[in-house]
Amino acid sequence: NKVKKYFPLKKSFFSNRSGQVKAVDEVSFTIFKGETFGLVGESGCGKSTLSRVIMRLTDADSGEIKFENTDLLKLKGEELRKQRGKFQMVFQKPFESLNPRRTVGQIIGAPFEIHGIASGVDKESRVKRLLELVGLSPQYINRYPHEFSGGQRQRIGIARAIALNPQLVVCDEAVSALDVSIQSQILNLLGDLQKEFGLTYLFISHNLSVVKHMSSRIAVMYLGKIVEIADAEELYANASHPYTKALLSAIPQPDPDFNKERIILSGDVPSPVNPPSGCRFCTRCQEAMPICREIAPEFVPLNDKHAVACHLYAETPAAQAVAAGMAD
Ligand code: SF4
Ligand code: MG
Image (cartoon, rainbow, N blue to C red):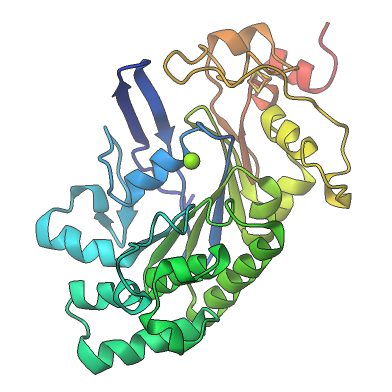
């Protein structure tokens, strides 16, 4: 078995309004070089907290993030500063993430200066090349963010993110704020850049149909936990967790791949302050069994590309009977 055991990530925080929030609770997955790993879930499920932990914008409570045999969470000082160049982020709100008082040239050129890679004319020619790569005219180099449309601003954010040949680009709802027609342009751009430079993406979205077109593998997150993880095609063809099935059936446009019975997700997402015991989805799951309220389900591999955390697939006789439709 080539699967290595890592310490899963945990992150909780204290909110005055609600108390202790378990935002990320024992999450573990591997992203392979050159792939797009999709992470899906409703808002508040912990996706953004997870991305902030990976970017070292906030500290994890426990766990590790291994990259080339180093635990990134242990890096400090100069080593951490170097790592920050290798991990880049494309944000949801392209306007808020660009400093309005800086020109495009200053914004995209900043990583070169911060990391002592290029300055002056050299920096300028690198910035112009990046502008071309993201489909913008190099002549825009002295313009300010407010002179651009939302889609153009996101192209600027992408140029900044890829400037230093990053090892990982985290795209957190990178197209959610854009019009649908612009979304596909930006997704195409991300795909083209990935082909050209072998980029690795962690692509985070609440929208399964956006993730579908981008991802080689997908993890579905619910209330701080990953509930299903699979190759993208496998996930869409054989979604197994009741939550994933519900998400898929909620996709509005008729899509032949999602031609499954419609499952309505009822009830609100429970608070991560006081998550349900046992399976966290049990308060909304139409297939919940008594065991689901007692015991949190472990991950069960369905095949070598697919694992699910749900008692329906556990190897207990009672759970198997339910899975086979023989339960009372
Ligand atoms: Fe539903 Fe139980 Fe599976 Fe949770 S473990 S998803 S409650 S069937
Ligand atoms: Mg979010």
